[in-house]
Amino acid sequence: MKFTEEHEWLRVEDDVVVVGITEHAAEQLGDIVFIELPEVGIQVVKDDEVVVIESVKAASDILAPIDGEITEVNEILTDEPSKVNDDAAGDGWMFKIKASDPSQMDDYMDEAAYKKFVG
Amino acid sequence: MSDLRVTPLNALHKELGAKMVPFAGYEMPVQYPLGVMKEHLHCRAEAGLFDVSHMGQVIIRASGGYEAAAAAFEALAPVNAQGLAEGRQRYAMFTNAAGGIEDDLMIANRGDHMFVVVNAACKDADIARMKAGLPDCEVTEVTDRGLLALQGPKAESALAGLVPGVADMKFMDIAVLPSDWGELWLSRSGYTGEDGFEISVPAAQTEALTRALLALDTVAPIGLGARDSLRLESGLCLYGHDIDSGTTPVEAGLNWAIQKVRRTGGTRAGGFPGADTILAQLEDGPARRRIGLLPEGRAPMREGVELYASAEGGDSIGHVTSGAFGPTLGGPMSMGYVTVGFAEDGMTIYGEVRGKRLPATITAMPFVPANVKR
Image 1 (tube, each protein chain N blue to C red):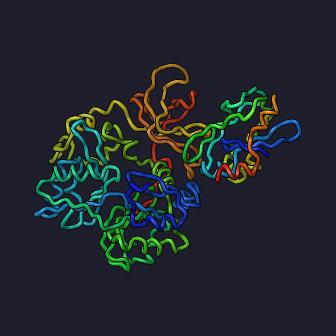
Image 2 (cartoon, chains in turn blue, green):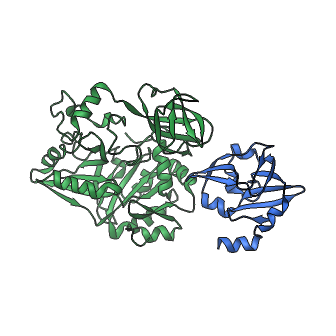
């Protein structure tokens, strides 16, 4: 598992990368009430805004952590966005992306480094 | 946050694990570990306890008693203060020369004087306005008392166990009752749409009374986050957002707060700041009106979202002044202003969110029915 400074986690599953936000991020956002997911099949570039999250506090954007094609999104979140609060690193995953340049993941933190990052 | 003022409950909020934020110059709890959503639902199902000690408590005395204070007060606000019975309170607004709202507040008849509760962010200006505008009255800010709000269907049973006598109060009644925590100044009112009380308690006893209430199974502490979603579901205005110095009471749909005696044809018509504008709008209707909006789907339309009559093109017809997800409603809700003509209940209009125009239906408020003890 890799982590970004934007508080996303990335997990390699076969030939795709599963992306979600960390428990720390979910806790900071508060109760999540709305999630807008990207369309399956679109090509994204690192730092594209791909997901919109609205919590009871505010709206925030989730950026694509790497270049690639969105192959699947977690449709359940459309009706049950609170799954992200309940299980950010599991059932609360957001989208899967087929990486066009897997080496982009090399720069991201491992779990120990992320824990240190959030202090 | 050392430059912020604190309430008598500051240490207790931190002990309870609250997330503290700056609000109206005070360090206040925005949420406790329960979280905004669950705090909101708890208040609607049981009883929620809010620290509102940052609000201004003011006593107005005149040598002629309540009647004289009320008569003087009517020069500052389009309200029938003189007709308010002893032991009762009423909603009022300070207005300006243009008819805009300078603050909204509660006034109470306490027999020989008037008691007023004003918004925290406006209290210094309000006190200055009353001192200047009521030269024959003694205007005193009460600085040695905390203020709590206990709201929800279990509020009465929770408080009655500690302070016998509160069960006899009806909505908008006030009372002064002795208690183990000193003399309490109570009103049966609040800002959630639920039954409940606001309780003014000596500052030194505020924490002890709060602990006694929180010891009850039905009572949980509620932060500013849930306070906002509760009042929005109830269609209640937040000063500085849904009403302000550029908004008139008529535009805001607060006509009910201006009693007949202060309107054209009444025995004490006019005589308050902005009377010409406000009385004309009462007769002819305003050019824009405060509305409730139910967005389709789950995306909230928050403060500042521009509103349009159609899905494409055209000029803005207004904007959102408050918007959030309603935990009890189970969906997003907004309040805003639109040009009259586009403001009919049931109409579909469009809010522009992240560049996309999303449909929303104009809806009568409250979004969630009130549950007060009449």
